Amino acid sequence: MFVAGTDTSAATLEWTMTELARHPSVMKKAQDEVREIAANKGKVEEFDLQHLHYMKAVIKETMRLHPPVPLLVPRESIEKCTLDDYEIPAKTRVLINTYAIGRDPKYWNNPLDYNPERFMEKDIDFRGQDFRFLPFGGGRRGCPGYALGLATVELSLARLLYHFDWKLPTGVEAQDVNLSEIFGLATRKRVALKLVPTINKLYLLSD
Image (cartoon, rainbow, N blue to C red; front, side):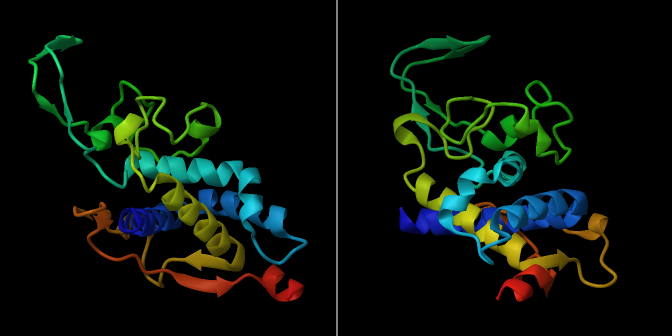
């Protein structure tokens, strides 16, 4: 559980920072939210996370496009059944492709666009209650590291956004960022993300 929770968290955090670097206006909006919440304290604490609604939408949108595990744990049909027009015999192993679901235009408008606002308008959570969004699976075979992983990502991202401003290296444009993937325990970037941090002046003033 700890390995799953930490490995997928690291991958999700890198994908989130990748998308934010490619969409500076989204990064600024998320930073403004975090810095407003933590402005008088000089740090982000765990209980602040409940107020970071836009940042949570950013994480959801990242997981929609870059699910930590693209194929969920296999299920086996107990008896013959029909799903839409597909007949599934008994004892058939079924794989759920969350990567494809997250990019399906049947369920998402402009599915390849990175748009966290779509989750501000929809009441969709991480617990697998909505079959359009299953980054951790659902039911009894849902990810056991779900709570640990999500808490790690949220707090880590909030602190990265509060303490630093981020930009791509000189000469690198948003469209140049490599989005190719490599599959393993978690879906990682094939080429590691490189960003240039600058410490947040508000943090220096509050120190």
